[in-house]
Amino acid sequence: MKQGFFTRMRQAFSGKAQANGHVPATLPPNWMGGMGGPFAYDAANMFGAETADWNPWLRSPDAEINIDRDRMAARSRDLFRNDGWARGSVTRITDNVVGAQFRLVSNPDYRALRFRHGSAFDAVWAKEFRQAMEAEWRMWSENSQLFCDAAQKLTVTQMFRLAFMHQMKDGEALAVLRWMPENIEMGADYATTLQLIHPDRLSNPFQQMDTHSLRGGVEINNDGAPIAYHVRQAHQFDYFDAIQSMTWDRLPRFTPWGRPVVVHSYDFDDAGQHRGLSAFIPVLSRFKMLANYDKAELQQALIQTIFATFIQSPYDPEDVENALSDGELSQYQKMRQEWHSENKLTLGGARIPVMPPGEEVKTVSATRPNSGFDAFQGTFLRNLAAGIGTSAEQLSMDYSKTNYSSSRSSMLEIWKTMHRRRNDFAVSLANPIYSGFAEEVFDQKRVPLPRNAPDFLDGKTAYTRCSWIGPGRGWVDPVSERQGAVIGLDAGFNTLERECAEQGLDYEEVLDQRQVERQMMAERNLPYPQWAMGSPMNQATKKPDAE
Image (cartoon, rainbow, N blue to C red):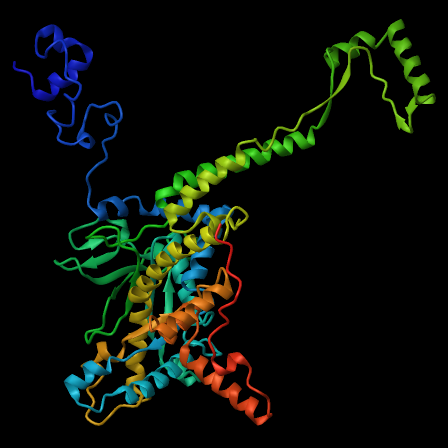
């Protein structure tokens, strides 16, 4: 039978093909890949020493994620609970993306509304609308009785922060916009409430395998768009809610008129993906190995500390006891012990121990931590930081090895990632929630609208256009960086709105507050300081060290 091409290739390595005359005795150096070889790319080489055992499966994103999703999520959460580096990385990223504030900035598209519905939609109306909508959002999202939360535990900003932490460690965040008119009877302004759902509860009913229209609990149409979500009434391992844990609710993504019901947020790595992955997944194994290595080093150091001093003896304790139990040698040793107990030998006040024959006192030399431990750990941390999208300095909270230039460069690169994460999170989770809330605000007629304005559903996209102010970027060198900001504003390269937003501030509040402070100074006959006059910063400020 004639041998196949790949069979002849394999035999060439064992020498059988040469003996049978299938291949020449001398093979060209590039016969397995590269130019002139059977593989146009070395990366496709099936028989090379580096790639022969590297044969990953080619699967769809849902097939790659959903089958092993629970195991990966459990390992990520275990790492988050028990490893300081992992928990610190999630905390640092969350503090930079959401932080202590995630403020709504309403930016209605008055130009689009003006072109479609008349000149009454102008900049003056947009300002009045923005102020009214932001005020209503604050009244709802920061309600003192926390009616914005179905569980009445958190403000909206706190729920956003918790949702983003879920997205980091579990790979996704899940929220439901509920309608609870009973809250109005208890003093709430709105019936809209937000409920966070643990991502583990999103699953196929009765753990059935994925189908054409059901992927990991997400029901999709023929175009791959989610139309409904299947959510357990309780977590699968809640033994106290065993019946509810085996009961699924089908929640539509939207109401029939388009109001969001379920909001599902996660990072997309592939087209056709319907569930998310933890940020730890690419470095999960390395994270665990580093945790084990740290633990082993600590255990070794502890053992060496506990057993710093020991006695070395050539005799077995039991044999010595039997030999000395009777006889003259036993009596002699007893006499020696009595004499030394009554006549203690000292040197400079320190007692000199007297050991039995053949025994000696030794100490353990400390060899932990290993001399290369810091460098090894630093290499690992840089790899982990790159994998989860932060800097090694932020991950380790160690800035001792950086100067101004390196810190500034690192901060700029990381800020791009944080800014992108904030925008993605806003688009996928915050914006739909704001849209659902705005619908009730319009229904209660609590925002100014010109005559003959379109209703909310007809102008929803223009009405709900917005952005979000997160935590401030901060300064590495406040003097020089603020000086550069002023120069950029004077040159027209930036706006006060953007500069304030980068530092977590609302420019209108800044201007209003400065106006109030100037008025208070004038009322008290106080001279205006330089900052109150808005003068450019002194150009003679000390420049940062650029080493």
